[in-house]
Image (tube, rainbow, N blue to C red; front, side, top):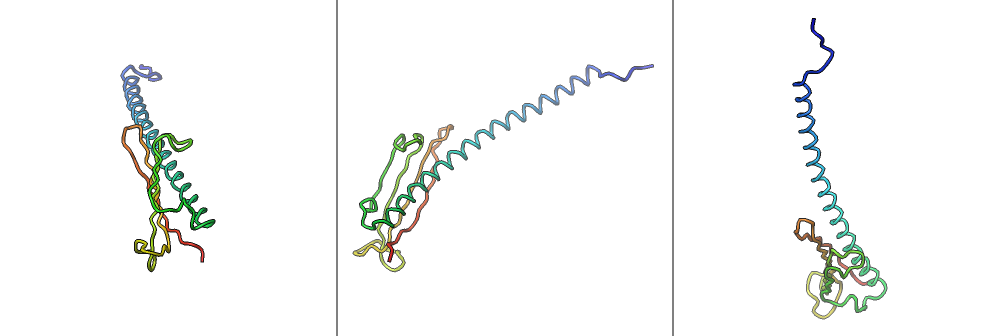
Length: 141
């Protein structure tokens, strides 16, 4: 009679190999997941920084259409210049528009302004990514 209650050495080795392959696959997948979460966190932070700047301009436009902050031009904040976000840089562009539907460059009368905010950040992999948001502001009647 043969005792079939235990496991043979071959069965134990096969089970160990299968378990090892599964653990390696989970570990490599975890590495990609952590990278994706970090990338998502950076993109979300960039969007929040851009929206924050657009909200500032919206508030200023409601308060005073003639504010110097709304003057046409480009403002750049380099890496380390944004409080609590040293790995991000921001560029804000204000363009005066005129004409019907604010479609033309402002010749004499500014009827609206186009605000574009671009936020760039560096990934751990070394690449630089960029998020851009824009809006059109018009004075209150």
